[in-house]
Image (cartoon, rainbow, N blue to C red; front, side, top):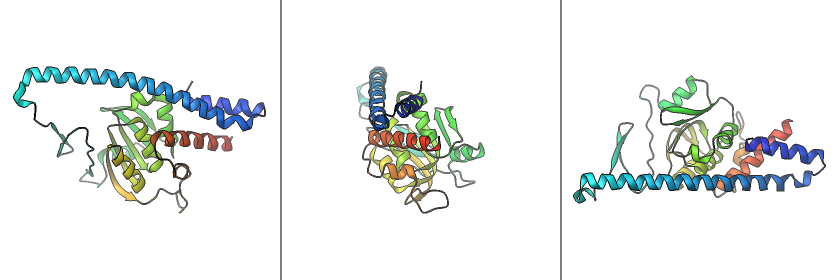
Length: 242
């Protein structure tokens, strides 16, 4: 059962038993449990990846010899040669020459999607829902370990989305609109990003009011804080609709 369904079940039971005052405590406990399990999975995954990298480096050292030990690796990214040193961030503004829009974002719009997450060239999650729900559901459905190292293609990335993205550490983010707060977070956590428009805030459509999810994370400082506040906010909005 996904974490969203678990949270909904806790809420329903609490309301039926007139235990509404314990809902927040129950939700926080479930989020903490989910976080502990995610950290355990991430730890095992990271250990396995580190072992594989050590083995690959060892094999390369045998092939290249000691004279190449000081050389720096580089890659070609969207036509630009970018140095890679100690996992430093690679921030790009590469766009389609025909439309002025990042290629993956243009494809997202053509398909009528709001979010797509790719591992390599394979889409592992897609949604046409609005708001933060798709990104939150991707975390609860796939888990942090599977989302690590992916490419996130989103229509809009504000602080809320950036904190959630930093929570599972993808390889790259491409979007149409990005807020300054989101840019600062992606810079801080050294996540590559590509956007066509930079705005001061993410507001409700057709309004100057701040997006509810953006307001929920105004005081959040870490990805974990952002994740917990966003899950609570999503649960609150779901209960209001019901």
